[in-house]
Length: 183
Image (cartoon, rainbow, N blue to C red):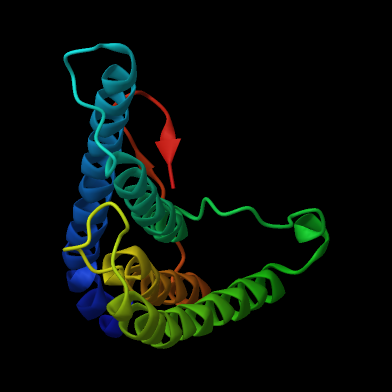
């Protein structure tokens, strides 16, 4: 492996940590959503449990965080939907080039999400508050967009690096403990 790639591989634990933190955050948000919705439903049908008015807006806000952050996680796993019908007909280097081009396009989108999302969070979100929670700014409703943009940039830089590295470094196959080979 060329020396530049060996040095850059030392950053991988930082990407792993960001991915792990984001995944755990999404799990916590999902658990909070489930608990809040359960409380909301119980409040409607069980007389001694109050039916708070804030639950719907909080659930929708938490869902928006989960949606955009999990989309950023999918970038790292390469789990986004993509057109692969012609992949077997294209030369491998052209395919890698197209992957890099797609990653650059997503990187540009992430920058736009940060810039424009931050403007919306400050301008629109900063001027209003939740109807059921007047003490809480709507900033938090718009903040997931720039936050996801940051996560997308982090994971896209890694994806671009991995594509470039695959052009120059032949992946070695290793035997795993179960008798099969992994790439």
